[in-house]
Image (tube, rainbow, N blue to C red; front, side):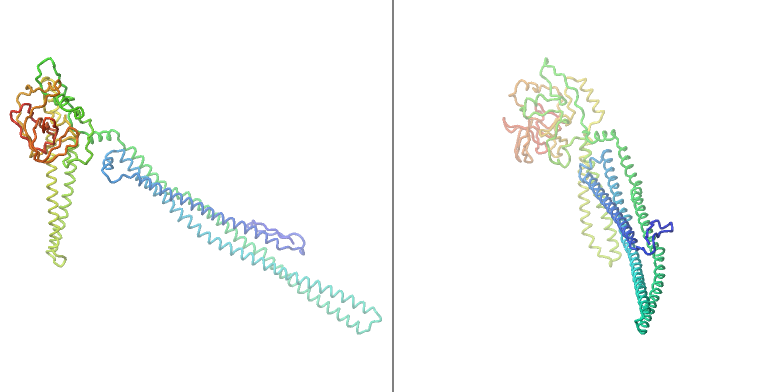
Length: 583
């Protein structure tokens, strides 16, 4: 009997037998077990391959999120004044928002990696252990059933051979008995012996036949159970296992897509945030912010006077002109400075003086106001601490067991000193701010001065203060020390016969002395146009401070230059020729 396996177990007739019953070859069944074992092993390997694929995808998402976070962190603004300055502009704030949204975007990729690990990788790893154990159990049962039917087959073959052998022995004994019975020469005893031997052999053959018949019936029942019950059940279990494996793979593939789909709303919000940040950029607002940040507060220079060389040389230098002819002749070429100093770079590299006097008026006002606001916050913070400590002291006084009231006094004293110090600092900056605001020109002043230039062509209007001058070192100094301010007598006739214009024709003529001064502090004078002085040194004043914080002095006929007005005490001659008044 030949055995063929129909793998479609659901159709019922799984096995078919063909051929003769004595030609049975049950070992062909084992080939199907081998094929199924190979197929199920390949299925398990496919699950392992897919698990590895998801694991690598998770690692990619993790690395991508890490790189995105590092990129966002790299371009985050640093805690310095430059970044704080940039935060005023809408495009800088939009970029910062984009970085924050990008950081959240990276977080969603981390969520993808975590969900892939927990919902797919961990589940498949656990399922792999289960399916391997189940597969091993099913094939163990199949092999056990196969071994049992093979063992029964061998026993049946043994019974069959024994029956065949006993039949042949009975035939030979019967033939021997018949031969002895026909031979007249054989004794009766020998014939009887042969007859008994033949009967015994026939009985043995009959017993073997009964045993063979009984075992054959048993084997057929076992074979029927094996091929129609045991093996189909095992194959059904393997088929169910395979279907569950395929179904699990399908669910994991669906989860693989759902993990991405779940974060899409949040990713969309991140992208919407980037888009909204980009749309919030306002070019006009940013450009106005630039104007506001760098507005100097300077007035434009007035009209250049017409200088009539055909009339007598009776004029004073125009402080609003683009250049000063007198200074141009007095100073060597290397020391002359242009007057359009809003367009000249500041050579000071340090942080500048405490009162920000090196800055233009408008910028100085903003810096002073910012400093005052900062001091106000510090004072409020100290006062809050003082109030808290005062309440704590009151609690200690009412409940001595909670603490010693005297232990709070040192801290209260320290805070009081800090508040006094901060208030003194704030008063100082408020004074500087008030002085700046008083000196800042208004629009009406600008129009009035413009009218004066138009109507008085031969008169020098010297009300531009410090806006039209540059200090010898290229910095702007608006404030003067109150202790060393110069009190000059105004000259009624501004068109006096000061020989300023003659300097253009006579380089050797020097400026007259208009007073003396005493150095209050030593001054190094490293910059061009300055002169070094020692503390207590007496010098001659040849040009007083015109509002830029510098006074021109002379040591001897060969040495002259500028020194800070706050560094010297000036004594002007009331009738000094060429004396000028600072308005």
